[in-house]
Length: 371
Ligand SMILES: *Cc1c(COP(=O)(O)O)cnc(C)c1O
Image 1 (cartoon, rainbow, N blue to C red):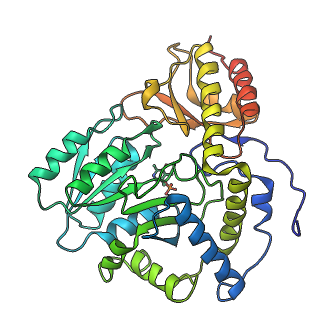
Image 2: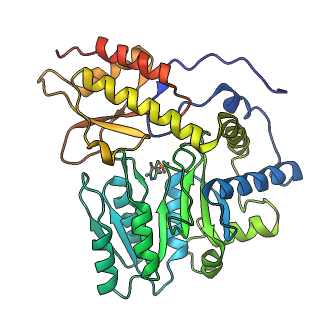
Image 3: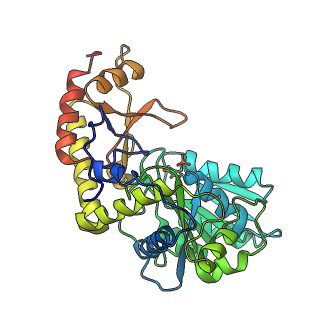
């Protein structure tokens, strides 16, 4: 490789929901400066857009847009561009990321309501159907696919079916599932799907990805409440000028992302990555349970992305000290985000492998100062 470089290894693995541990080759891809106006760069962007669309769906009616900023910027761009002035959004939430979508709509002065399922229950498609039946004004419905707050994988296909049967537009936050869990956006009924560079595709942070049903995106011209988050304008410019972003784009991050896509393919695609994540998850849960930890969710609701555990019951346990001890041993874990219960989370996505999970379990056992 022309820019193979020898890097010092990261002092610790990130076992988090993103940014994640990335490969040295993904990081090395950033060692080149590119001109945003030049055809080399624009060709790269177009290639990425095609691949991202193909990753999300086999349906030819979809297109994709890349947008500067983290995943939330992509969600905000979709919500504030897609819902028209006389539209209304219904958010089906069971965690912090779902509630964030509601907050985005509220800040955008978009009429919005919330079905809050609590953090430990899966959304009920029947309840969504009933709500849509009684609320003809609702034009759009938003759901998080994998709710990273708890690691719950939501029934996106069942909710999507209800939304489409009711003739509404379906927005899916697939931030922590695209690239890591096999699915087809069209089969889920998703009209707008959002993800970001630094989740399961294993790039570095810096931009978000929106895959949209072209016929829905085309309706959104002139609807956006913001200039920089105008998804339609961003898409129209990329289409018309063949890979041109409206404003300065994160060129190094984009180049790293292309390398991440190459590595996803080399691993065997989404199916192979899913298998690795599942094995990471299985080893982690089995090992943690053997050490006395209890996962927050029942088996059927968990995803292979991130796992939340209850805090140990012993009085002497303290997250900050546990965190520090694990970090010294080379592993960074994540605090909990569930409102009512004390939890912590361990992610198993990124350049993280079953052997790392085994090493982690040894480190956890050696860090249990409270027993
Ligand atoms: C990571 C993530 C986001 C985006 O968070 P950012 O901090 O903006 O990258 C949104 N939704 C879900 C479910 C996520 O996991």
